[in-house]
Amino acid sequence: MCKDFLKTLKRPIWIGILTIIALLAIAISLLGYFIYHSKNYEVASISTLNTTTMGAVTISNGNDNDNSQLTTGFTTKTNSTNQFNNPTTSTSYAVKDSTSNIPIYTLVTVPTKTVQSVTTTTPVNTGMSTTMGIGSTQVTNIPSSIEITSTMMGTSVQTSTSNQSVFSNFNASLSIGRSNFGSVLLANGQVLVAGGFSNSSTVTSRTEVYTSTGWQIATLMKVARGYHTATAFANNIKILAAGGGGTVAGFQTAEVYDFVHNTWTFTSNNMSSSRFAHTATLLANGQILIAGGANTSGKSISACELYIPSSNSFINTTNMNIARFYFTSTLLSDGSTVLVTGGVNTSNSAISSAEYYINGSWILLSNSMTQTRALHAAVLLNDGTVLVVGGSAGAGSAYLTADIYNPATKNFTAVGSMQYRRAAFTLTLLPSGKVLAVGGADLTTSTYPLVCELYDPVTRTWSNTTMLNHGRSYHQSVLTNTFVLTMGGNDGTSYRLSSSEIYNF
Image (cartoon, helix red, strand yellow):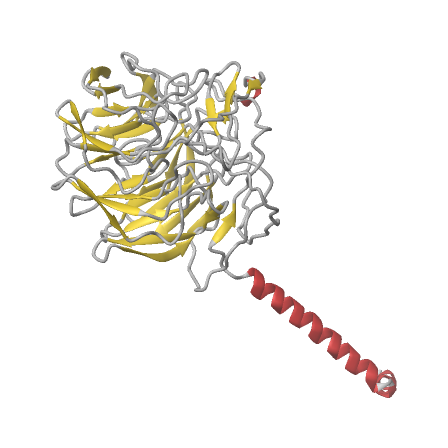
């Protein structure tokens, strides 16, 4: 052994030097790679452009049996005069399955210039006071009839200039990926989600509950629904799931989930109007106001009705002054006034108008928002004003801007803009009084913002906060006693996200 060692010492010194240099080069390369891929991105690429290859809409049956889905063909219609779909910058399609008749509106921009593929380091893992535009006052969901599909091509991705912490608990996954679903906070503090799209074409009836040990399967809904509303009532012991899309576009049916018995039961009567992409708002008297949406032809409607819990039935009430879908409904501090903002009208154009419901009547405001908005979000602040943020006016557009509605003056006032454009995102009022903006799609730059933002009602400005692990839109965020739970959503691919993330405040 000693002789062998001496022989080694006699080898040319240059061999040792080259070996050391090679090892150093490898170490430096690995270090550079690690530093580059450990940077936090502010935005992730949206999948875009492929609007012409959308498959037929398929609907899971009541047993959620994926082997018995409808697989018939579809027809396409090019909207040449559609302002909301912005035909000057993109080609939009209203796709209807020949059997289900569910319109799926695309809002994507077809760039006229060459773009480069982008690679991001986004991980791919296979309260009540939240509003996303469509749904109940506590938790509202925007239906994703805006599909963003295609080939991971887009604009440049910026990198973060600060070390932002990220959402935690990224591995707590839903049993099925879903977007455009309903979510509510239950009486025991758990979160229930129901229905939605499990991929770009399939609606599910599956229901599950988030517990301390993760997601647990609950009883299936009677009907597979997407674009529906889910509204907790009776002290969050029961949930009304109303309308949505399924075997036809715009259900008249509704059903109630009983948390105590883990059962779904149809309401005593159907709604008077077929609707999806509508809103549902729980009033202080226990009734639920159902407003607007789109009918079986995909056209905005102004029809409204009330759900009466004592009779488990619907009665008609006064119609809105303007038909709209993709709008927001916010219950004001008095518990009986409901403010609705923006949306898409019967001409399929985004609008800036607003109106409010009080004692069975709708009153159109003379003062409008500072710009047109659809796919935006709104939330009631602790001082009784309403923060209205972001949204889109059609393909290739998304907004940073924000308005404050003052019920005392009935006026909208522009406040500080977000740092990232967002449509189909969530706003959550935190116990601190600040508002958390999570996710969404920036249709202007074809990106998904990963950085979340906080609105300060004192300074009326926004600041960056933690980052999502995965870009998402058409997701849900629910405020619990100790954290905000964000789950599901659409990242532009054909599948829907099953991951969930927690923001600790």
